[in-house]
Image (cartoon, rainbow, N blue to C red; front, side, top):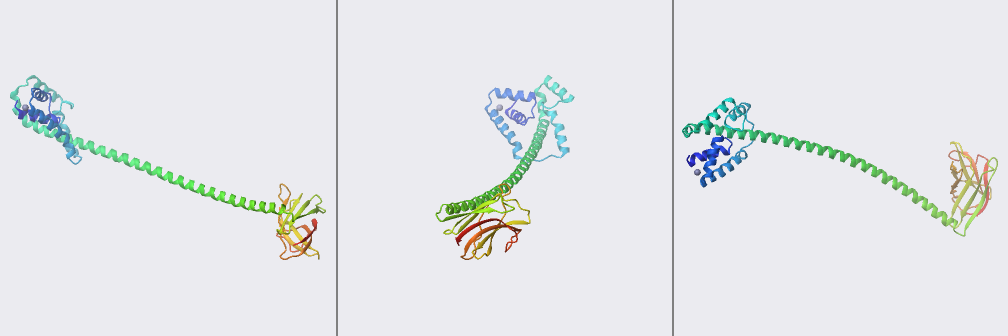
Length: 308
Ligand SMILES: [Zn+2]
């Protein structure tokens, strides 16, 4: 065979359209060391590899696809052989005579082109299917990511609300502790000063078990009243403290309710608006909200002598 014929077979082989006798003929020729045909084979393989890339992916019509697929197996030994194909191959193998070859070329080239188109079409179908698959995977990944982001967003909002709540609770706690510390420091200063004065409060019938202390520091103008063994009161009643002047004037000095657990109280009596001599301090039970003048009996009383 001439190099031009061999090179046609090389092309058919490269696009997968050559049968066994064609491949054998090419192989024998190349083994003889024809450099030109070896180069042609390299080129044909490269060209065949490029075929699907140069074409835009397209889906053939069902009719064209069926037609191409029907024609393809008849020319490809790797495809499922039909009975006629097997017989034809048998003939070719049996009488592989050079005389038959010239008549074969036009048909072979036509069929090879059909095969090449079929390959391109199949590769396009594969390519489209692959693209669709990739697209589907991408959409799934995006959907998963969106779901994940939505969950993260909800969690961040929850966490933010929790943190805000915790910070507010801590701020309230700090304010409460600061107020208590301020009171404790003032009390320490009042009790620790040599200007401290103190008087006892005695329980009177029917509260004889009750008792207390009143402390004051005229330099610091601070007063504290502590009382113990105080019965709890109904909601519509309150204890009320009175400051009583030397002339017997009773001045309201604050309301309190004892701690129900300890039955005790420590409170700061309200000081009269201007300087007066106080001789007595007393506690009565009054209607809730307090009274301007005592309406109940004196239940706790102590003698004081202080210039306010
Ligand atoms: Zn050659």
